[in-house]
Image (cartoon, rainbow, N blue to C red; front, side, top):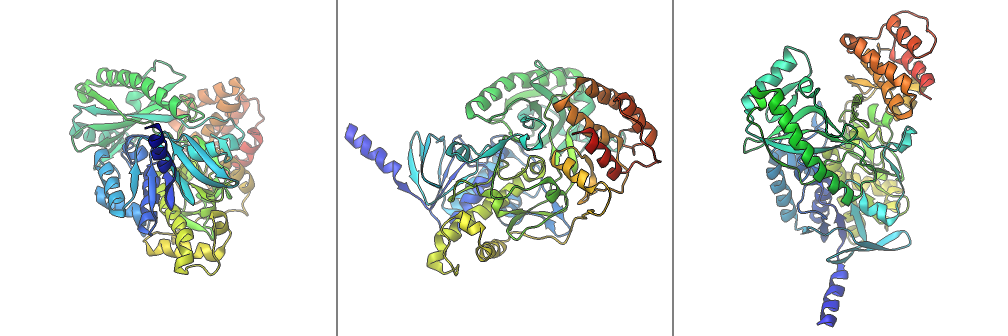
Length: 568
């Protein structure tokens, strides 16, 4: 019996595929489906119990869609997924999982759940086998689609951690535990949020299945551990059964992204969710008095962990200013919108990009030639990932990765390439190979260009300083600042203070942070107005800096030069 069991295990260990995708995240599903549609024998391995990742297991039931004048920036499989969901940015999480399963079945992808990574084998720069507790799998090509790039990290690919590339610290953006509320009347919520947004001008609102707001309501919440948890304004997604999925409970200090530590953090945060619901019931009984906690998401929504040192790293100014590349394989355009790194910190907003391209090279680890990384942990600088991390763009990149694997695997027989290419490094370095890949993506309905372009202001004073600050997440800009650094425009007081706050929370000294936070309180009625010279000098003197001459307005270019000096 033992010999038979060993032979059975050996048979599993030698199971052969054209492509093994690790992680049934949205991008993992897209990669597996695309590879199978292109004729590959594909295995999709998932360490958890379901497919769909953050959208279905993390309950992030609102898509961060981006559009230009021609419509959605992502076509292909994402457009089909979005169509099947009903083309509403918010959706029913159970329905989304059904759609993912349907796409996988239709393409003929083999899916194996609850198979966490055990060990890997490689031969020089090539992975050869992947082992889970249930068996082992061989393939000429592998794809890591996990949110934390667990496979590539354990294989030995190089990464930066959190925002290490900025020089501020190695922290990661807060994660979120989404929880489900029952018994909340959606009609009342809808009216309350639109009144808050339209009459009180808070930015709140509701439309279709989506709701966002209640920022003032939650401001009084005191967490059980203020260094660990925080409650932000509520982002709501109405489900088919009438319940609401609530994206609001932030978790800090989850650096490293170890799967076991993430699960412990999720279980602990579930207790905090109970406290949050009790607070909502007490604070606003008219809206939340009948609310019941009906569960928490099976997985955390992890915004950030590692960032791959890929063949190319996408930078924040390339995102904001809408740069495209010869090897662009997907378009992005979601705002450079980052969550806090510290409890109580002002969230990050660096502006809205012009449609930008993501190069194929950002998916390719330097150390491995037959492995791609497709997730928010791919080759993006931390500030660039504020935009590039979102699911629609990741699904487009997943589709591109699956097609790339098929191109390498099938090209020799199909005569698609004049010169055979053996691996992803060779493909990334082959203009003709990239052109074949891009053409096939276009044939599948992908979008690789946009008529909307960014505005590069390299001749304006402050450009060099603004780019340097932007790469560190320290040059805030409003949503309406699209595809531009806006160097000739007035800087908003709240944006100027946000840059100071973000730097001094990470680097100190504590005295300067107190000055900045006091200024936010003192000038709270003016935070959304242009910064006046008198106000600026008042802040500078309180920081121990000298006054600066000139009139109003204080431009963003001038502010960039000043901030560059103040934030070394």
